[in-house]
Image 1 (cartoon, rainbow, N blue to C red):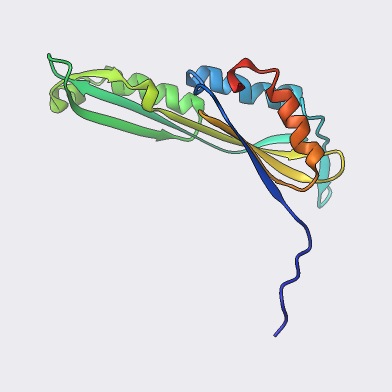
Image 2: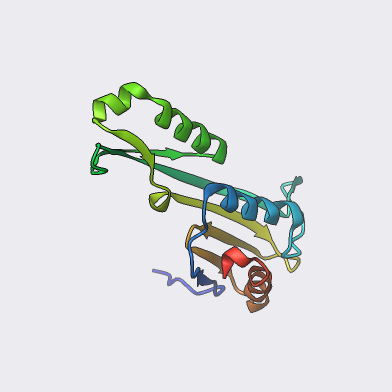
Length: 167
C-alpha cells in the first residue's frame, strides 16, 4: 500500500484582538473594505477559463442575541437567530425586538445582548505568487490560513496594524 507524501506545508496564524469588534456594522465595514480595496495586493485568476476575483467572501455567519427581562431586570428568556448575511441579521434583530407576542410569551421585555452576538466572515484570497489563502474574521480574532509563504501573513499583519479595531 502506498504512503502519503507531504507535498506542501500550509500554515495558520491568528491575531487575538485586545477588544472584540464593537458591532455588526463595524465588522461589516472592515470585511467590505478588504474586498473593495484589496489591501493585500491579491490578483484575479482563472479557473477553467472562468475569471475569479482577487478577493471574495467565501462564507459568513452572524448570530443575534436578544434577552427577555422582567421588571427586576432578571433574564427570563432569550432568542437567538443565526443569519447568513448582515442584512438578514439586521432584519432578524428588528423583527425579534418588535415581536410583542414573543415578548408576552417570554414574560419580559426584549433587550439586545450585543456582547453575546457573534460575527464571522472568511475571505478567499489569491496571492500574486499564485497561492490561495484565507483570511477569517470573527469578533475577537483574525486568522490567516492555508498559506505557505510567510510574506502573505506579513502583508496581512501590516494591514491589520493600520486598522484600530484589529489591535
